[in-house]
Image: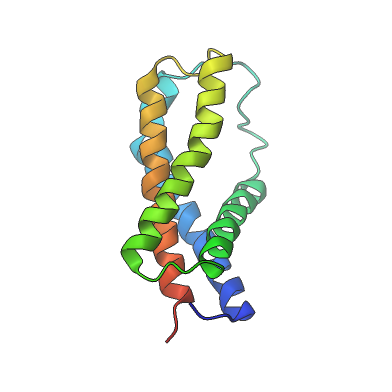
Length: 139
C-alpha cells in the first residue's frame, strides 16, 4: 500500500460514493421491500419528507474512512484479503447494531431479516474494501 495522504483521501471520497450507490442497490432495491415487511413500522420513526441525503452521505463517508484507514495502516497485500477482511469488519459492525435491536426491541419481526442485513453488509463493505485496496495500492 502506498503511504500517500492525498491518495488516502481520494480513496475515501471515491469509496463513499461507491458505497452509497452500492448500499442503495443492496439495501433499498434488492432488500428494501422485504425489510419493510419484516421490521416494525413505528409512526414518526422513519423520516420521509425531511430525509437528509447529506447525513446519509456522511455516514457512507465515515464507513469509507474506517475501511480506508484500516487498509492504509495494515499489511493486507492482496485483493481477496482486502475484500475478506473488509467483509468481516462489515459483518461485525452490522452484528453489533442488528443483534442489539433484535435483543432489545421488536424492530425485527424475524431473524431472517437480520441475516439478510448481515449478508448485505458483507457484500457492500467487502466491495468497498476491494475498491479501496485497488485505489490505495502502489502503482
